[in-house]
Length: 141
Image 1 (cartoon, rainbow, N blue to C red):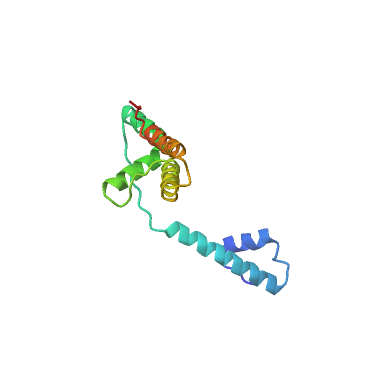
Image 2 (cartoon, helix red, strand yellow):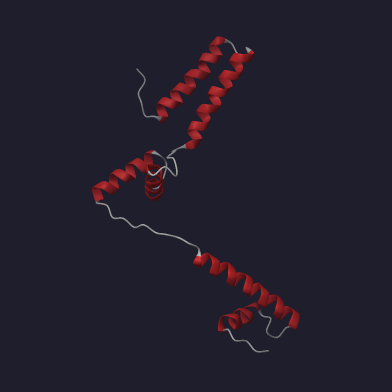
């Protein structure tokens, strides 16, 4: 058996099929080829990189803003840049907004079906309002 690739030979040696049957060797070769193609596609995937430098003071501000939105500074910067060109929108803490939406939907359905008392309905709406105010970091008057 003639092997032209040192990497393939190392793979076959590591797999322990060099002294095996031809079928085992062929199976290991095809597996090696599959892995090789997968890694090649990953390396050749079109990616562009932007590197930027900020001052320590600017980085601290970015870090604080990112932490307030439960994001890493890198993902915050990426999202902010993409949202400024319109290809993505900055939607921080989506789970909190979905919880508020769920409370408002529950209140609307209960109001339409008259399944909750006015006191329970006002409690749901007050809870949703409190969550929104907390989300927006606004103090209630």
